[in-house]
Image (cartoon, rainbow, N blue to C red; front, top):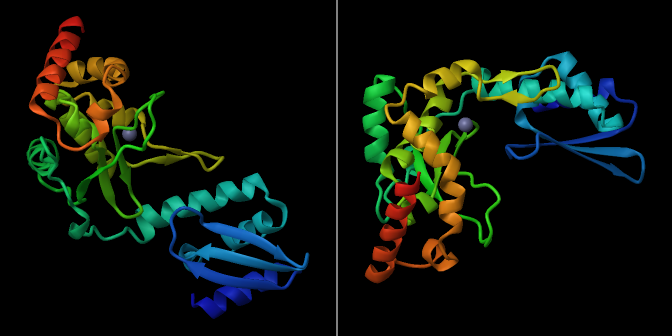
Length: 252
Ligand SMILES: [Zn+2]
């Protein structure tokens, strides 16, 4: 439907005057603001242009009452939109796989041939670690299906992590691009389905990677912030890092 049709349909469902704007920001599908306690300012993702009446009704219920069941309907619609209705086209210019030690594209291409018949087209890149000193948990990789883009934590490039582990993270994120997620009745998205776990275990160094993953937090905690975050690693530092890594692996 057109933007004008969407505004008319939403207005017909709402007793307050509405002011609607459309955005393409993935972080919030619907932002609601009441102006002078009367007019409702709705800033909504363009996915609502493709929505049926029940979804628009849910949007209004969410705007008026912050209804959590309505929120679930919106999240289900968003999932459907991004995976089925308008799957985003991969943009190769987002790819930036060359790290200091690891080229993600080389791993990606090999995995693509070995496990996915070369069919995955999603670009891959690094992301930088946030500046915090103590780790509680580390996000090693992510797949954003709304762009789409696979990102790997640059920590895995700078800390001499075992290549099988880095490759496992790449494989895990690639698997997300082909395994369907499930949406439950509350609108929560489950990405690690039993089918996903079954296929994840097919990775050839799975047992080693999972073992290393469990202990990786201690490994990264053992490194100083400078080791992880700052500039090029000096040779002496590098030797110390490798020794630490070997000691760590020997203890596994
Ligand atoms: Zn995952």
